[in-house]
Length: 410
Image (cartoon, rainbow, N blue to C red; front, side, top):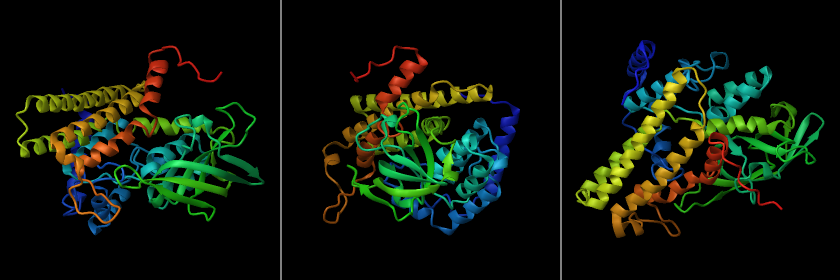
């Protein structure tokens, strides 16, 4: 099944394909498999990082920036291209087809930028947004805290106003990419007397401040992509409070909407490539004729196709100028649970071999191969950006209108 998006989109696709062909540097596509699924901090991350340091990548980055195709979904007045969601999806598809990377600005592009665009003042937009596009500011997320689980509103980090500054003290956890960041967007409680979801502020802080410290949290895969962070009286100007003091929950909901729904129209592409790689692995091991293996692979193929259909459905919604419904939570729940199951299927295909690290390792290290990393790391997908249990609550309560889950508080 395909979706006819009309002549305007067909023309945009042709123009995009021609532009990529004319501007992608020679050798860029061969630097690494840009279309592969790379698990967080796991197999493939080092090769991807090395490829981004190549001169061809730097040239490609400059070409995209010149054409306003970094953060292309942002409005033109904020430095983007003003592409709607349908055109962004087409752009992503054409990059995938050409096997070249979409240069992204991480959480700055997908989370901070949209929140500043919606809730920031013109002065804040003029200051913070260009620095994201150029890559000068690289953000990590300061939401989760020890002991609060998925209860984001239960945060304890304090923000105290001191003249024209806000002073932040507390601890954050599960911070992805902290070692690469120089900025953090933080939720802190600025009015302890307010109700649970009130009295919270959304603040951008300097993550290189001496009063910030962090340490890696080692994962089952052996990687340490996540960190725990300690904020010991970090000062930020009140200018860095986005959305106004005590209005951070509203800003956070904008942020989380982008986090859970981003890329839903094209995410099937990377899982499709991964699936066929697993099929190739199965054939190499002579197991492609086994009935149970074929049944598992059929299940995986069906789920990748369902992702594609869901993407088409979302594209049709966006093309009709309609607001998406609960697709963000549905999509996040679906792909994360799928990927966890795919890791289990891969382990079954590898058999007993999957239980042993096959690569030489230094003392205390255990480098894993691609499928072992997928099996272990994919579990994180059912936790970050809202656990599967939280996503089911959102779908049940907000989409299906079911009664709210009883509170455990007495």
